[in-house]
Image (cartoon, rainbow, N blue to C red; front, side):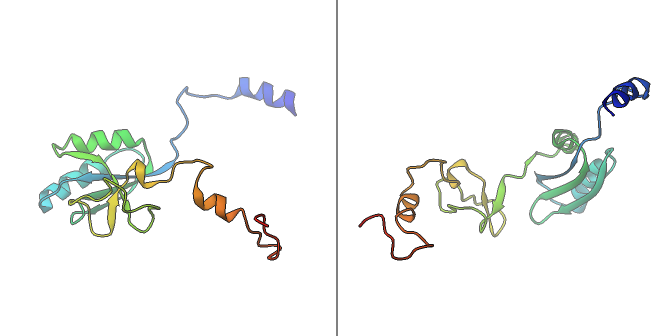
Length: 148
């Protein structure tokens, strides 16, 4: 089958375009004050090629776009409406491993969300004290202890 696949690649007709972009969900923070602002942002994003769904939550200043598209194109299109926009910088508070890290809280964050900061995640190191103490004991044999 290898020879047939090789020959069939020469026989296929391709228009030189790249493959479709994968299905993605893009969340953007946009300051919207009124129904007109919301309508303008929704219309700008809905008319893009590859968009499957658009969800606008004005109370959180959040626009969620799902479809086969490039996140940077969506951000650029939203900025073309004259609104200040950025990628959604928040994560749910219950998802963060260290929600009380420096710089995680933001006054402008919606309720239940904190800023997604690098310090909120533990550094990948083998020197963590929790890992050292957890390796002293074995769940398989409760009478075995590496301290003794």
